[in-house]
Image 1 (cartoon, one colour):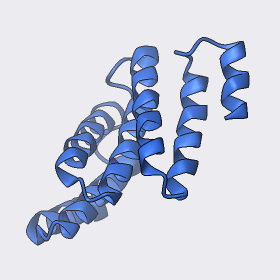
Image 2 (tube, one colour):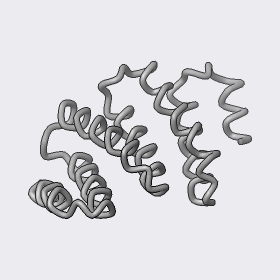
Image 3 (cartoon, helix red, strand yellow):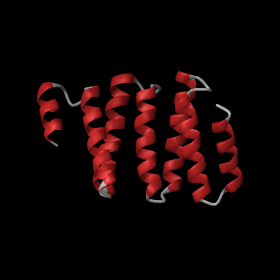
Length: 132
């Protein structure tokens, strides 16, 4: 919280550096199991990065993945899936089909599908991830 307050004194609330601090704070809350506190912070980080970089930027995709992981950990798969898919699309379009971030997001999707007992889709995502 202190780092965020300092950053906000120095920069506008829409500054990407502020989004980074917010993301770190959200991660800390997530690790403490404070999902209800972490989620709005992750959403805020997504919004700031979209304003700063546009909606089709790898930094936005990373923020989306962070949010999707949090939501997946709460078994809210119908919400997490589209976030992962959006991040995957951004990574593929901006970084290429064979980038490690693409593989990581495919793996996250595979884990989510496995937890939903959609084993065939999970296997397909794992296969794509391992081919990268």
